[in-house]
Length: 330
Image (cartoon, rainbow, N blue to C red):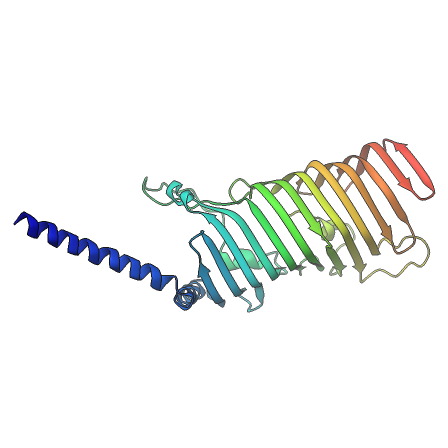
């Protein structure tokens, strides 16, 4: 009798192991994973009320998620995010702590589009329904989802932000961006960046504000932070950058620097320890060099800087051009 019980237990165990192994092998087939991801995308599409597509999906044993041909549209049918390749490396042990810790995210050939309508509503906010909600008590055993990202790697990525309220469009193209984060700031609203490196960024700012009263804040279209997010950083390096500014309602100036139609090239920026809070930038500037289309060449600028819409302060300043050298505080 005892032998029969042992035999039955072994048979049941073998069936369970075989079934688990079969499911594991089947789920690791690329076309099975892709089919599951496409069904999940369809479910998300129905929930968001917009189009979400995934061309292919692959989950490896090394806890890597590979996505290709990803498309998410906003509620107006315009592209919100489109990416040729997305790679996500996550920590499996973090799930035991009721969180999802992403070790690294890599986007290749991505396009991100943000748009603010004339009422001031962002397409991101409308798409995901980001609203301030009252805190509710949760059961002790509920999964309190927490997202943490340690590293972001972008290759040949395009961002654009269209602000219909202020009449401002910002386009950013980046060959390569590598950022290491201490805190992404999704909950704390304080993004902490340990290291950020950007290669060959091109920034185009087009300003065409609608008619406003004369006493309206004219600097508002170029305010660089909206909301409560604060960003602090340790090391930022930008190489071979370019910034173009074009105010469509201002005439061109052909003598000296045209501040309404700027074209700044070969930008090199090395910053250590600083923060960006709303409209205020504070940083220890190690080196800034650039060249403007009017012929102005900045060989080197360094110092302890504070920039607001009302003033620019630079302590311990050292400024050098091909014809001049200044060392003081302004």
